[in-house]
Length: 445
Ligand code: GUN
Ligand code: FE
Image 1: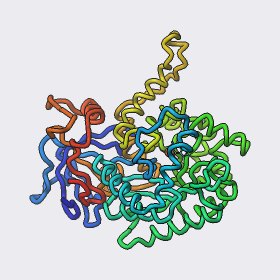
Image 2 (image 1 turned 180 degrees about the horizontal axis):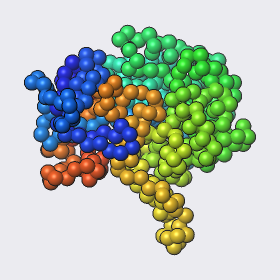
Image 3 (image 1 turned 90 degrees about the vertical axis):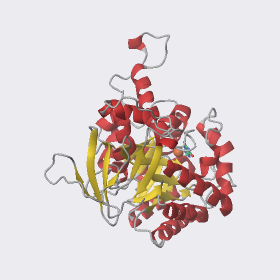
Image 4 (image 1 turned 180 degrees about the vertical axis):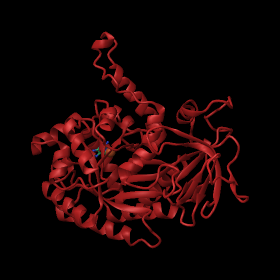
């Protein structure tokens, strides 16, 4: 049911700042535009429960919707395919041929509609989507997000480099890459009924796939249009090394050189970002999409999440469909915890613990992962979502541990705080998510 112009009485969690906040019997008022007008907690001065309040069912938990900072929409049909191949082989042999099929609009419609619905049903209320090189299919992706009610940032992939992109799948020239991107920006901004729910993004695939001319023109376009930029950065040894060799500087420095680090741009992966790269991102207000599942297959290393956060870089989570074999933020939140633990300990059992190569202090916990999945991603994008705060959009999901087909079980009434959130983070699956709202409108349930 739509919550616009209504108040809701809820128990749940959010993490507007670093610590977890748990609330009970909170009254959240949503205005007619779907923005949170007030949040009042029992015991506060102005707390009262309106008679027409919507009481969420006993035992349910209200969470902010998740933000997925890195989704390749066209790759959904190959989730889990050939992840034993190195990135550069996987791209050429599987991914580019699949993406080339989106010249067929009917195929695009079928996949994209299913994907947006599936992500919404898993609680992803905001997604940052790579499309393909095709303008029409990517326009359709943006239209579907608007139609189905998902907050989305969408880009046409720009990839024109004849050496690293196949003949059957690339922009024919730098100018064509930029013209297509510009056309998508104009199209999305003019979509009837779009009041910023869906926003265009400039998306060079990654430096290896782009000519210097294309990078230069895309940087100028981002500056001219005020668009965010989304691309891959320092993902694998091969990719990181390729840019060092071609440009004589790191990926992040090269993106800065071409004007591609505009505020609230997001760089995916970043496993090999240096301390000075992190400082550069922090200065430019550029965030990182941490894709821990994908990184386990393609990056050959673990993203130093703690170091990024300590450097003041905004970090959120990315599923990296289909480099990551799971379609949701949930699995990536869990993997963020697991990967950080392995980074902290090191992984070679033949070595003594102190010689195992671990990074002291690298661990994160479920609360940290929950924050990345919600406000972390929102902060990276500079969007007023991800927590229940006055002025933020009501983007939320309702989790119900009592659902028969679900996997989340809560037996003890007195489990609360971080102990309960852990259970929710590790135990929830799609059937447990009984309602999802974006901008106060019900998009699921
Ligand atoms: N680098 C360039 N393109 C891709 C892609 O599709 N997936 C991943 N994981 N990395 C990339
Ligand atoms: Fe990716």
